[in-house]
Image (cartoon, rainbow, N blue to C red; front, side, top):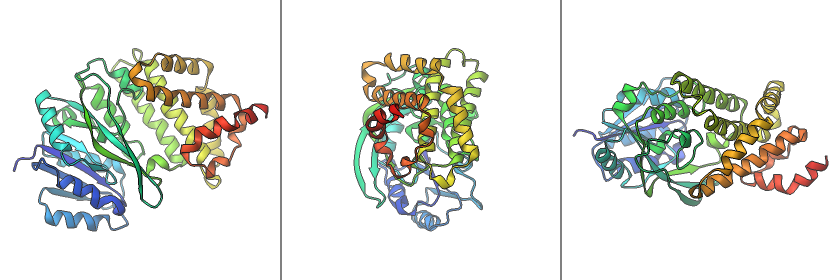
Length: 366
């Protein structure tokens, strides 16, 4: 059997979710699959679960790393093993709709896509592992768009830096030397940025959501650390260096700055304000104060506001989200007391904006 799509699944200590994820891969309606699973030296039962699946399905290739190397190294290793003309990624706590790969392969093949973007369900769960709700997130980018870089840089119209939200031509990935950053969190940013920006056009499947993204409390997107903050800035610095190497940084500088202020500065402050006191030290405090001084300038905030105000009618959700982030950054810039607040330690991130709204008057009087 000649595989049509390679599904790459990086795994690290996800035994609680792994069976559901792997089952969704092997039960796809498209059977001509090459499934490459990388176990990053898990310390739980993940590798045992993977091997059981491999015994039952000869389409599965397992890469069991001898020491923990991180998602970037694991995914790069898997790409070298991938044998199919199209590659997609599945995180080991997420799962696919039953016909997801067949739909994406047929669409990509028909369009001869280098990169095909698609929608997903965002599934929220609690600490007990119970799925609370799910809602579809569908792209609004025009299919076959060639003027897409501004939208990618500012994560609009369905773009994201998650590797799993696209299916890629393997030739496109290999010929352009597209790789994940190794040894850091946010390894997706460099990979997705190069894959997208090097594409001649972006094709879009928007009829239905095909992927289930589980937002769980213990995932990397919900945890806070000094390393995570520093890696976020490093990943975005690598993006700016890539834009300069491609000689397009000046052309898209304002779009990049919108991304940097909203996606990097805002989320690093969110992490900082949520970090447990035991993790705070002089280095991270100094780092965040320098970020505030260097990047939360009147000029940068004015740029962000103008970009938000110019967003189109089909971007109402992202526009509202970015406006909330902008309001938060404006308050952080204005009020030094934000560096002293430790109430964030016990807050859920969903109540973050409500907190700022409720206590805004108190903070202004301080």
